[in-house]
Structures are given as C-alpha cells and as structure tokens.
Amino acid sequence: MRVLVVEDDADLRRGVEGALRSAGLAVDTAPDLPEADEALAVNDYDCAVFDRILPAGDALGYVRRRRDAGWTLAVLFLTARDSTADRVDGFEHGGDDYLVKPFAIAELIARVRNLCRRGRVVRPPVLRHAGIELDTARREARRAGVLLTLTGKEFAVLEQLMIHEGAVVGRDVLIEHCWDAMAEPMSNVVDVAVAGLRRKLGDPPPIATVRGAGYRLT
Image (cartoon, rainbow, N blue to C red; front, side, top):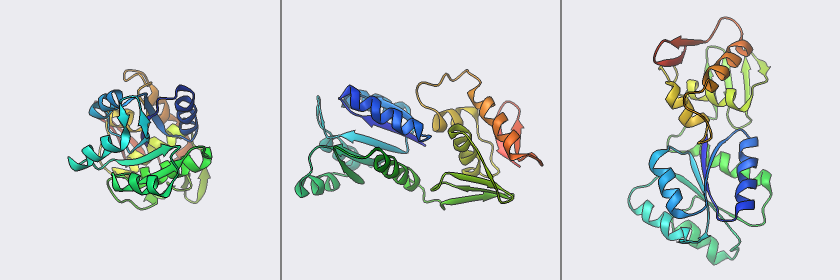
C-alpha cells in the first residue's frame, strides 16, 4: 500500500513518514500542495494524508476541486482544528477521515490502513490462493495453516500477486505499489523480496517467474 503525506511541518512529516514505513507502508511526502500535485500526477496511491493549513492554502479547497473533477483517492485530513464544525467541513469537502493533532501514532496507522484497504476496489479482508491465506487486516500470512514471518515488503509483494491472482504482475507494478520514491527502479529489491517469499512459502513453489514480464502465482 502506497501513501502520500502532505505536511509542511518538517519534523511532523518525518515522524509520520517513519511511523507509516515502520508499519509496512510505502510512503512519499510533500511539504505543500504544488509538490503534492506533482506526486499525484506520476504515482498511483492508495491513500493521501493532508495537513489542512499549508503555505499554498487550505487543503480542503484543493481536495474539493479534485473531487469535483472525479478524483476517488481516499483522503485523511490531519489537523489541529478540532471543533465539530471543522470536522463536518472536512467531510463535506471530500475527506474520508479526519484525525486531530496531537494524535496517537497507532491510531494514525490504523486509520490509514483502513482507508488503503477500502481503496477504489472492494476486496475481501482475507485473500486465498492454493493453500495460502493473507489476512490484510491483521497483517498475517499462512500456508497450509502455518503462520509465516514475512517482512513488510514480502507481505506487500505477496498481496499484489494475490490481488492479481493468476495474472502476470510486472516489476514496475510491484515497485509502484510496494515501494516509494526512495526505491531505485533498476535495483534488485523486487528479486530479493520474491526470493525471500519463495523460501518462506516452501514447496511446491507458488510463484513463477515469467521471463521479461514479471511474476505470477501458479
């Protein structure tokens, strides 16, 4: 799951970024609306977290304009404005969730994950394929009932393969959804994650390499 965090306070931005990455999410950040525009133009996100008051203006108007143009991305407003009127305003301008500062990191992670799961396509919370079970809510993976210990990236790659069950998933798609802007597209991060998954999933091998195209579940 890939998230965009738009926050002008550098310390808070780094803190939120670190917390979400530690929770296994791919995170890009922007300090203002113009940079958010650039990131949204080139990347596919599952959720965006907006501070309300930014140097270029109130994010409420920005989100409202995008909603009016058909934008469907899940949005969480993160703000110090805590009155009932402010909260209502946030929802009426297209927000899907609203979290008031100061906040608990665990609650932020839970809310962002919930919005990412809802996304633009409704999917079951537990994905299943050939004896593999992936509980996206609890972040648990099992094969033949045995709990697996996966890294955040291994879990993310397996989730993408199970979402596209049977179809070939390209390296570019895996990079797009499982890593963030810090990842080097030509590096071997995907190969390392797939190798780790194959080792932990065991036999018979459930992940096939389609030469020159990507990977798919068999």
